[in-house]
Length: 394
Image 1 (cartoon, rainbow, N blue to C red):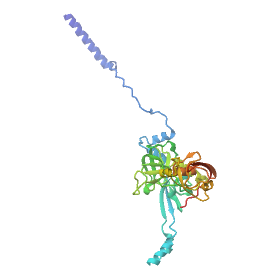
Image 2 (image 1 turned 60 degrees about the vertical axis):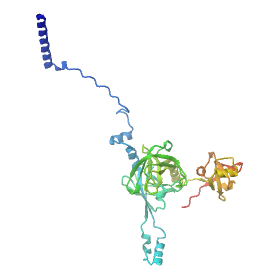
Image 3 (image 1 turned 45 degrees about the horizontal axis):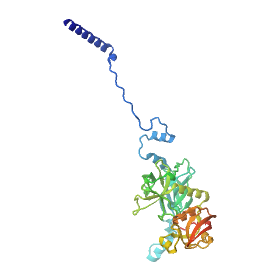
Image 4 (image 1 turned 90 degrees about the vertical axis):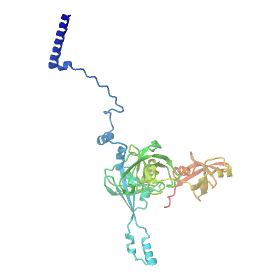
């Protein structure tokens, strides 16, 4: 037993000596292997995912952007401030003379023409590298001088290319190089609930960006314009935003801000914009022809009420009641009479006066079209040669 204990003690001593020597001369031989770190799962695109040229440049310049700052940076340079100066009232001299005659006030008739002109403030959007801008007609209506201030500080005079009061669209042109141009969006893809940004110069405080959503599409019968098909939004729109841009989250132009519903003059969360599809069509016509060609047949209309249907025992429940026909107008020449109910213009069924107006205006002037009419219990189909819609009186 004693012999075995001596052998164990000697073996232990030798082993400890060997470990001491190895730990001193070769410590890496005795190091424990470290556990391998678990693999990391990356959600989304890898860092090396390719980017488009514009996105890559913007992300490199603004690596920590949040929200809709990229859309604002893309669209804002093309949104301008519009200053329209209007001449003093024509009867200023007569008013001065009347004050002197009736109230014994000093005769300031010599200074009447020196009274300050009125200046209207609004916004506009550069939509062409050739210098064409979209804005509202009510921003520049009656202006003797129009100035445009770009976001980069440049200021220049603008030429009025044309206006269309019935959609409240005006087209301006400026002569500058290196113009920032906004990208046009597609109204067909816009849906209620989509986020939009309103960009303009409210109250002349400077360019301002507000955000909201599309509250409704196709708003009409608001009494704002003759032809209405508005985008409704709750993005804050205030006086001075008129003519500015309504853009999507990519910075593409989807509408021209034109009006608000307000009791105080400020935003209540109900604003309206003209769809870019309508604004583009009007702009092309104004640039090409100097006016917008719309069809007209010369009728006065009313809603078709259940009382009228029951009184005249009509066989239709939908259509537009003709309450008056202008003498020598296309409708009168075609045989349309008061009391008739128009149900169709060409291939388009019409149920409201607004639909009839849009359907007729879409027919090119001097073009013959079929009009379906119900007269009592008699159904008629008349050929009407549509005329050019008269220019509305101011």
